[in-house]
Image 1 (cartoon, rainbow, N blue to C red):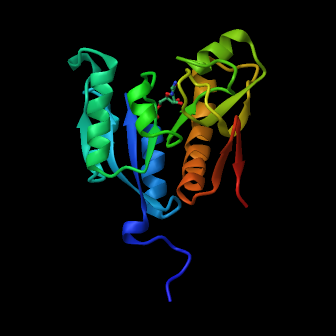
Image 2 (cartoon, rainbow, N blue to C red; image 1 turned 180 degrees about the vertical axis):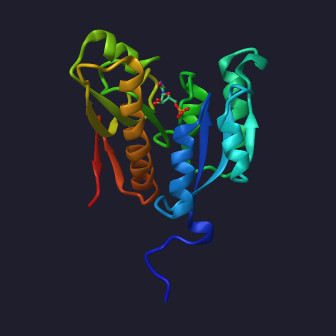
Length: 211
Ligand code: GAR
């Protein structure tokens, strides 16, 4: 008898939103394909038509869609299009992976507590753009990665997982960013797996992990 494994229609469907290189997207693709994450990426959406992540998706036969925010008159109509495409693919979970737009009310209200983000700093320090650079310029001795639920703020949602990395004496912004990225690729798939297995419980600002 088959047990303990999600099969066919039980598998969660993930939509990944990107804006660029897509190395976190690749980590999620790899974890889904290896079975580490019991889910399938059903669609990748980029707001930037030149995002390299679109090619990564196509290589793995994942539908890749461009929804360019510049083509819409405002954030609501832009996000309505995203929600429409996510709906067409019956998405259960939205993963932001280097998605460089602040999520608005339309997307949030349609996917409440179903949007995750990876941020390249130890939140609540250094939210927003260029978290690695902000931390480096500030002179911190430890930085890291945060995976969190998305709420209406900028990188303010309940924290699921964090991983610290040291800032070494000879670091540059680039070497620190590379050390952080390596950890992003590890803990983001872990957090997504926990979500897909139903093992994350939000209690106010706390996220409890089952088991
Ligand atoms: C990653 O470092 C991610 O944490 C960061 O952008 C990079 C995208 O790389 N995201 C943010 O800064 C969001 N505020 P990737 O496209 O190779 O995954």
